[in-house]
Amino acid sequence: MTELIPLKVRLLRAGAVLPVYMSEHAAGLDLTACPEDGAEVVLQPGERRLVPTGLAIELEPGWEAQVRPRSGLALRHGVTLLNSPGTIDADYRGEVGVILIHLGQAPFTIRPGDRIAQMVVAQVARVCPVAVEALGESRRGDGGFGHTGT
Image 1 (cartoon, helix red, strand yellow):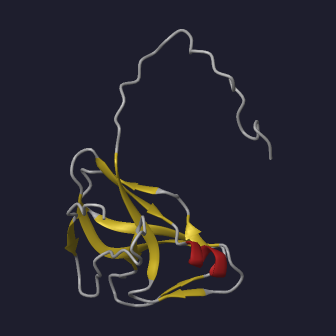
Image 2 (cartoon, helix red, strand yellow):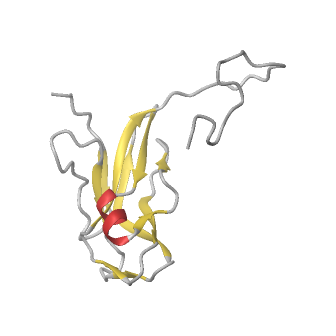
């Protein structure tokens, strides 16, 4: 069993739900919708919207949280994240919001408490960019986008 690392979570309003792992080996904690007014959110086809979670988190320095789509919402309804993954930095203390976009054909209703995204917490390696005149050789070289096949 992997050691659980405490994550400080502030519930900002009534109806906010602590993130939870939905299975024993899940990588992401599910995030739920918690609109400020407690009302349903209806996404029209093609519409994007920032959906609040009612949560603020405190990450330790050297850690980040990535907000990612839920595969079931994407497959069944065409609802996904516009900026996937969204990054929550260790020094951010505001409300965690999820930018959803609806790529389906019919209006989609999000009710308070619905699972809308997942959050993966991971360590971050910080780098020190250094300008150089040339880069080392590699077998791939500068081949990109589709270089290794379709």
